[in-house]
Length: 93
Image 1 (cartoon, rainbow, N blue to C red):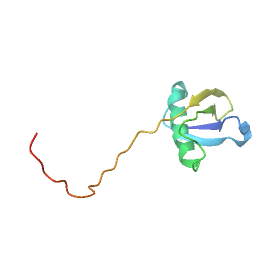
Image 2 (image 1 turned 45 degrees about the vertical axis):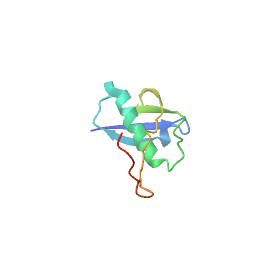
Image 3 (image 1 turned 60 degrees about the horizontal axis):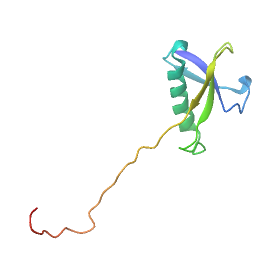
Image 4 (image 1 turned 90 degrees about the horizontal axis):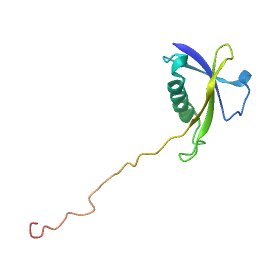
């Protein structure tokens, strides 16, 4: 596992960056950014709206930046169904 640090939307400096461990190497920084986004989303307590993107800057432990990544997410519709009352049968189609 590799340890990275990240900041979101330049809200903090490197000194205040959050740590994150990933199985992805630095050459796969886009995948690290995707994992970081998932972690940030779960920790954000509803402050990240589905229709907005955020900027995530990822660093190696020594402070070297791997880049700034714009990340967003889409909601997939989920459907629920319940029968209000039994359907009356009519002539077959």
